[in-house]
Image (cartoon, one colour):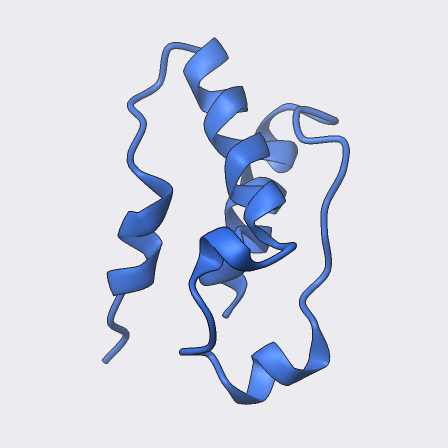
Length: 75
């Protein structure tokens, strides 16, 4: 769920460069029990993904589509 919400991505980036992603949106409680909930684009957590994407793009790092996180499978 942390990956799908963007929290892990933003926290990892902030560890490499403090404050790169200054605002993080927390995970709603019901998202923890329902990881396959509504599409990310309709979630407040999508702001994390957007902020992460902007930060890596500014640094010239490879980007991906936020919707790619909808299809992440964990074994």
